[in-house]
Image 1 (tube, rainbow, N blue to C red):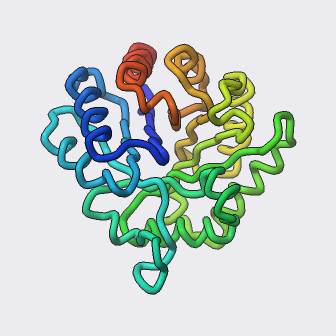
Image 2: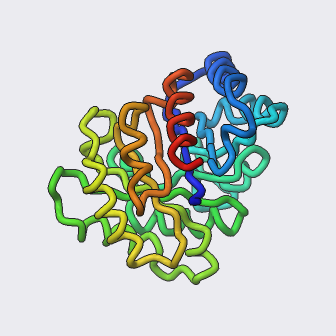
Length: 246
């Protein structure tokens, strides 16, 4: 029985009251039994981390916390940035290398590599996103991102990394990858990783298609964007995954 990761990436959404309501609505409709064998991770915006963490701590339902990004330096003159150390009060995970960070903020594989090392050194587990920009693009593009992310990192670092395969063309478009195709790509990714490294799928994941993805042998969970902002939709996803994995 595999452990399944369900990572809720709220992106640049939810003020404090909205984040509180969303968190409370999800948690009050779950039981500890329903989340057994599931690793549920909420990734709110920085401004809501403390509030969401306070709600999670009071719940009997086991949920972890993640941030959506961090810098590679522990402190310094980097106006507007967040260091890994600043996240430790609330977070156990951090999303790194999301395609939106690459596209809009110029993050390179080299920068992401430095962030991975910094996050792990600080005690955070990185969820590293990789994926091709155009539908049908060769998998070598994706594998290159994976190799560059891990370049120069010792095994102790590689053991801590979680990867998320997110085809850029599928994010927020409703045009999700075929589950069998995603499974094939993730199989190729896993062939160059240490054994048991989790690899998730992300890209227009909904309650309607989650079962098809989780049923695939190589897919260890999902990175979920828009669907995680609707409590009832995210609850449906959790309950369908639980039904599939037991």
